[in-house]
Structures are given as structure tokens and as C-alpha cells.
Length: 182
Image 1 (cartoon, helix red, strand yellow):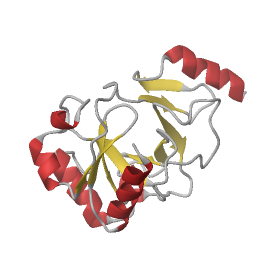
Image 2 (cartoon, rainbow, N blue to C red; image 1 turned 90 degrees about the vertical axis):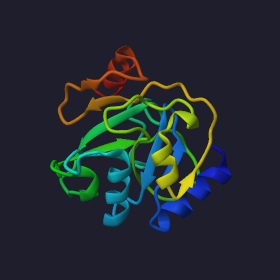
Image 3 (cartoon, rainbow, N blue to C red; image 1 turned 60 degrees about the vertical axis):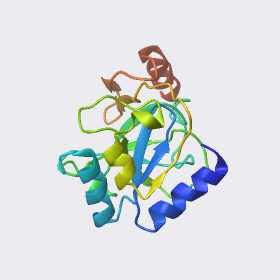
């Protein structure tokens, strides 16, 4: 994503819009994680059940690099004792899914989900994003072809990190990061 695209993404989200954007792994949908109408629109475009949590994506390192995993193709499940971003956490307010795909001047966190229909294939190219999603979005950014492998989801809520979904970051790299954090 170019700096210009990153600023456009931030402006769209700040205005209450939903954007299709190129992440580091697959195309994503983004909106303001604290805007109930925008979150509802994002979920409706995807056909995602409202009770299913989504990640909050940051474009700056807000809490360390977690042993070198951030920025990168991981989603970290973290304890959320302050219950921040309740619209993203849905039915599990004590857990926050956090992503930092790359550093960019977006200027704000976004609620993020992959730009596909719920349960559908991940989009590597903009034309792989379903037409209904592209047509319903307020901003569509083309970043060319992406790797096409979703993020690795790592549960960090216990000392023994657990991979919930294998994806872009191999298990060996997650384990090496866990060892560095000890």
C-alpha cells in the first residue's frame, strides 16, 4: 500500500466508510472499530455473523514487536481487561485480536476482516473480491497481487502461545519469537 493509499484509507474510515484495501496477506475490509453503523455495514457486505469477532489492525507498533512477529502476517489474540474495541470483540470482550501488517500513515486503527464472503476463498487480487463487496464499499484500493495466505492466528493469552490458525507465518517463527519473549 502506498502512503497516499494509506492516507485515503484513514480518511475513509474516519468518515464512517468501509474500504477494500490490500493488506500484507490478502485483501481486507476496514472500518472504524468504534462506529456501530460502519461495523454493521462491513459485516453485512461479508455476510459475517455479528457475533463473530474481528481483528483490530494498527499501522504502527503500539505495544512492541512480540519477539519480531510485528509488523507481519500474524493476528495476535491478547487479553483485553479494559474491554477496548467492544464492537470488534463481539461475544468475547475479554480478548482482542490485534494485527500490524505493515507500517503506514493510516493514522488510526481499523476493524479488519478479509474481503471475501464469509467462508469464501481469500482474495489475492482485487478482481477476486466479490463484486457485491466492491460495489458496496465506500473506497476500493488496488494493491496488485498479494501472497494470498491469511495471517497466522496466535493466542497469547497464556505463557504457552498456541497457534489457532496456521497461515502466513510458519510455526517455527512463532516459537522462536516466544523464546525471545521469555
